[in-house]
Image (cartoon, rainbow, N blue to C red; front, side, top):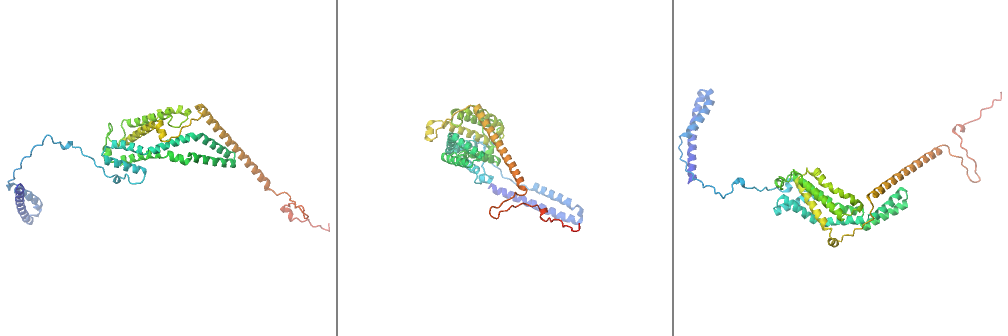
Length: 413
């Protein structure tokens, strides 16, 4: 009923307005025929005046609008309602579109975030620990390869030294035997270049791929990641204003190095171990200075990854775990002091320099002898003799004497 009354009132108002506009247009046409210079201004005057009078003369009875009920105190105001940010698919942002490892990691993080509905900080922490758990066999294989190479390094270095000395002496047979022995020994104990590459390359490549993936997500940026907060950090795409995350990551990394060197989980000689412990003081200083301007998401990942590495390092110190994983026994070689190691290295370098100088002098002398021999053979060849019954002396006659004839004798003189 209320709607019908409103429609009726609007129709009545529009009819009166149209009638007055028609009358105003009729008056204007008459005026334009008599006084054309006043038609435009009077047209605007009649049109506005007529519409205003029509609107005043119409008496429309508007229906009464019922009063609304007051808002209850229990209803939450609209300004306090927190809206949830919905991210577009990563493929529309240019992420997770290829076959590179960084794109796989982006797809993995997107799946974890959408499936669990966790915040991005929790997603990064859980995703990092899950990834390190998946890569635990790779980490164990890397540690086994390091210990295996450490156990066989003295023998390997002696074979390489023999091979190098044979090459310097230009002894082809000895160098061939040393090369064959070096190849067979490396393949037998799996310490060759191919095995070292397969053991040591995967973990750094995966770490670098994770950093590239997070850098792409922060640079896109992902809307929910940009709005995510983490304690004192307003956005995970911005750098840490106080550089606390990089400092914590460097501290955990230095503690991990100190534990590995102190307890012997990393294969390093005791002589070098006593001097490498001072390196543990560098990460807490260098990491905030060099990587403090990176986004907080990358800093959170580095901190979580350092914690995971430290936990696995402590786990591998247990003898029971080593036996279960078939870790090779670490052989302790003869330890020498740092000064003696440095002296041996300098003596070896000095000896190699002397051998290079000797080889250079020998080559220089051989070149000089060859040049002198060429000069000797450049002139006329010596006299040759044929052995046999027809042997006779062959003497080289210069060209200017071949056509020489004795002068004619004048009988009248």
